[in-house]
Image (cartoon, rainbow, N blue to C red; front, side, top):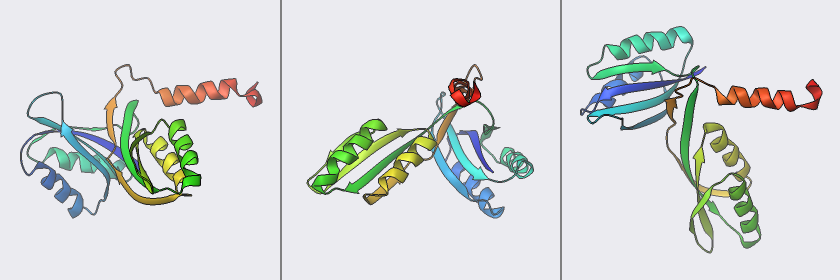
Length: 178
């Protein structure tokens, strides 16, 4: 199972290296990693996605707390969160496909950030599912390059899982359940 960890660290050189070393020593692969300044000066937030069962992740969290400069570690996998990623995708475009690609971009609320005679670059921001979906649809066209950020996440203050609510509303409005 994939787990998402949110780690607050002191913004010091070598912190990320120590964390990566811990993961490497234990044979873990970090699937996604994003680092940036947090709400307080001198503190950074690291958001990482890593595979493993619950027991293994608990052990990993205990090991993270033993590292210098780690302030807080939170497994936000099963907590109501807002998750976002950014993807830039460069496509080779032939004239008769341009309008189809632009229509797909419009549906996914992607922005065209560069365009030329033979290619275009889209910027897509959204939850990981949205990024995956548009990427799968665009595979039918000639993808030249993809660059993706790691997933970033913040816990919802009211602890309301809107994905669960959305699913409940879909089920409620589905005539098969009436």
